[in-house]
Length: 202
Length: 95
Ligand SMILES: [Zn+2]
Image 1 (cartoon, rainbow over the protein chains, first blue to last red):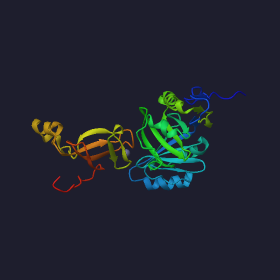
Image 2: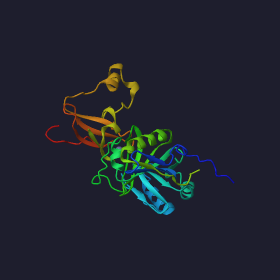
Image 3: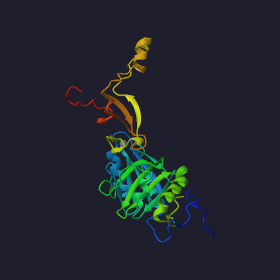
């Protein structure tokens, strides 16, 4: 049987390769394929959503500007009483199916956004070309989330680890030009584009 | 770079925000009871001070929430920000 046609917007666009000086790799860029589930608590029901999330996904409701990562998914704070769950479709689909509609709305955003991972010693310098949020280690640390604008594109920015690795979640319709911006911005430091990780959420 | 402190997200760059005009203007409870002059005053007349101004801002490219700010229109300094629905804070010194 042949492999199914990949369906994410970046499949076929973000090709593995090296940009800029061949002897240096200041940044690595790759697509992460994952499911996205947005949960928004109805008025006064944030406590119920926190209890549901703990029971259904083993995750606490993140405080403002933070992410809480579990074994199978991460919960990102994106607005008051609103979280974005990022993880494998196999982990998130059962959560989506069980959300009590009287406590929250549940939106499958898997194909509404694309996820890019930018990592490496030059990652902060690359992002500084398009992002005005202070990403200095003293101001922005692993586990922090900011919804902001990067290179004119509305972006959910999540620092995943201290490498540093930044996860950039952008509208799918802008993801190709956004990836091109990142490659262009990273080329002077040496930019390795690596194969996608994760599984197609479809 | 001008930083605006969203009550939910903290200090963030100005480009994430959208301006929403003067704050604390209540919509008349019974618009049909107003004459044209009173309705025009509700719609169009603003205090427009040189100095401290209470105004609405929207964190459009952040959390999406509306909030209020006290800004000095002469210096452009943000003196306070506070969630929508809260009373205008007292800055002291008659401001
Ligand atoms: Zn905000």
